Length: 505
Ligand SMILES: Cc1ncc(COP(=O)(O)O)c(C=O)c1O
Image (cartoon, rainbow, N blue to C red; front, top):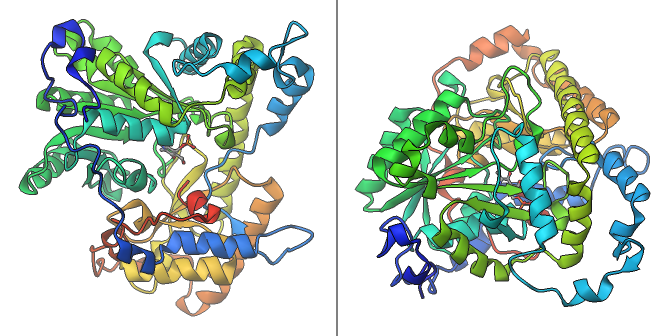
């Protein structure tokens, strides 16, 4: 079944675009998860289940596990709640006092409510300082970024085609991009030597590895700002990546789900669409503007993952048309669209919310970084996101992924902090962990830091100072193979447990 059929192609692309999914692809025969995978337990899911059985509560369960593996933004709920209280019509499904219940109950157009799409387009533009404008007719609404990423893969890749993704990357991509589409991910290995920035050499290397595996590379997918690094991609790097996809004639998907969390003035968030706009009309000549697609969602910036609101933004009419049809499988409910049309349409609210949310995120990030620094633990300098990328390699007994696993188990079980090991994000260096800070109170974060301090001081007493620990850890890494990553292909099991689903956030 063709996902993008030729009738949907824009006139200038008449005929089949080799970069889009083949009309004769076996897209309706995706791979099934390996049955043997059910026997293998994915460590982060397993830790998620342990957490669910024993969650920390300052009063009821002060010895419980603190959830630091969940990229949730709970810091600005009060702002949204205040707005809801002042705008009861939005929740009460009323317009000017009159009920719109029947209208919404019947609405099922997969193009979405125009009022919501207009408000979302304006909000996305506001987040980028109005440096780019979003045309509502290029927006496809989806049930979160999860659904947006999968729909894009269905549109752009045939079974067995590949997307290049810089590491470390969001572990959910292994599920969202591959499971039902049959697409492959080829990692672009980034290292701590340059702060995990993507280089042209790393992209070329990944491209060559894909070709060796006889995979057709359909595109590059970046997350900007990055999950798990907590950093916005510098403009120069975006330019380099755009040059790469232009040279190869492939697509670029930019997952910008964290765009509203970029809290640093010195490293402001730059959307790939700004880079493209700066190249116009050159970009149009090369067909680049039809091969760059943005994914967005309200799960992180507004802290509403339960609302399931996401979007694809593309200037390629064939992609918009096909993805709109695909969105039937994951629509945003009409009452959610109605409520959010009013919320995002309130410019005073969005302006105030975006500014205040960034301040709160920065403050909480500083609290985590200072707490870690006081016990000799460093982080990659972050400027966005709901987490820090933390270097605990000096606390490992061996510089290997086995060492990382055993340290991680200690931190989960002995210290009671559910953090995410870097190997679950396909990091090629052992010893890095993603630590989330926006899903808890400042007091809980203090408790977490106290526990970590006690752990470091008691467990590493014999090793002397933190400096000595770091020197001992400076020995070359024993193994760069990553057992978790190798088992990852179907280790993301289909499972009914909510803990597993959440562990990947
Ligand atoms: C980079 C990235 N993309 C997509 C998602 C999925 O987001 P959603 O809840 O909107 O489906 C996440 C969630 O953590 C993420 O970090």
